[in-house]
Image 1 (cartoon, rainbow, N blue to C red):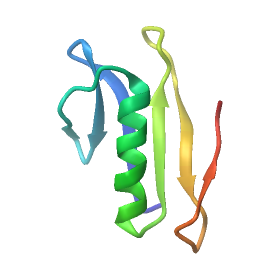
Image 2: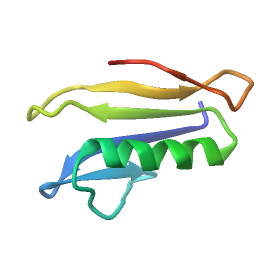
Image 3: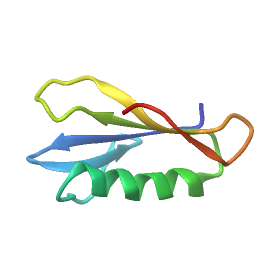
Image 4: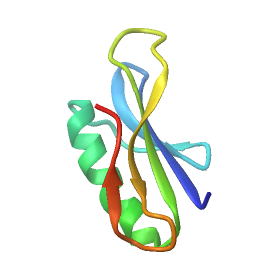
Length: 78
């Protein structure tokens, strides 16, 4: 797997985490998801976007993943 991007609640805001670094805050998880999918597609490698559920302590689920051997995504999750 190339890159894993996480969307999670951190310090009271929704943020993207990648390579142990956090992004600027987003108002809601949907805005962070839209932004991180752009980054994941741009990477040109196989990538996954994992999102933490809205309830405290919720598990992560795969929201988006690039197709094996292509840069065409397939939607998963929800």
